[in-house]
Image (cartoon, rainbow, N blue to C red; front, side):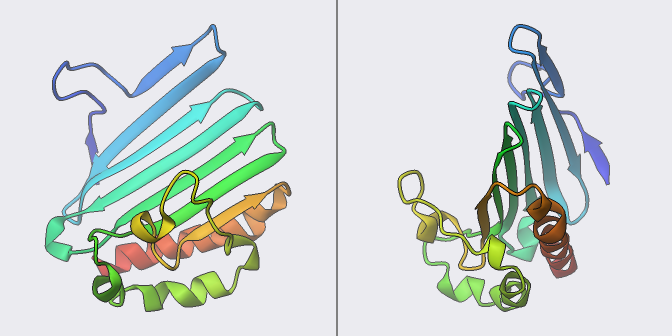
Amino acid sequence: LRVVPAKSSTSNLDFSFNDNKEKKARIVNHCYASDEYRKIRMSYYDAGDNTQVFNSVWYPDPKYNLPVLGIDLLAFNRKKYLAIVDFQPLYDDEAEHATTFEHLLRPIKDEYDSLKGRMSAKFYDETKFFSQQMLFARFEDEGVVIEDLFPAFQRYVKTHVDLV
C-alpha cells in the first residue's frame, strides 16, 4: 500500500486535514494506492457527538473489471445512525456483470436482518447506483455497529480484496 497525497490536482490544495474551529468540526482524508487498487480514499468528518461521518471508496484497477467498494457510516447525536456498504455498479446494465460477485455477498447480507433496509428513492435511484446486495441500515441502537455492521463490513471488504 502506497500513500497518495490528498491534494487537488489543479490547485495543489492539501485536503488531508481541515479544522473548522467556528463549527467545532474537522475532516481528515487519507488516500492510498496499490497494484490492485488505483485509489482507496477514506474520509472522516468529526463534529463531536452532533455529527460523525466515515466515508470510504475503493477503486480497483480497471483490469479487474470489478465494482467500486463504497462505505458510509453516519452518526447524529449518538442517537440516529445510517450505514451503507456496497459493491457499486459500474454499468447501466449491471445485471450480467453483477452475477460474477453478488452471489458471494448474498450469504453475508442474509445473516444480518438489521442491514437489509431499503433506501428512499427521494435521493437516489437505488437500482441504478447500488447493487442488489447493498447493506443499508437506519438504526438508533449503537450496538448494531459492533454486533452487525462491523462484521458484515469486514466480510464485504475481504470479499472485495479476494476478488482482485
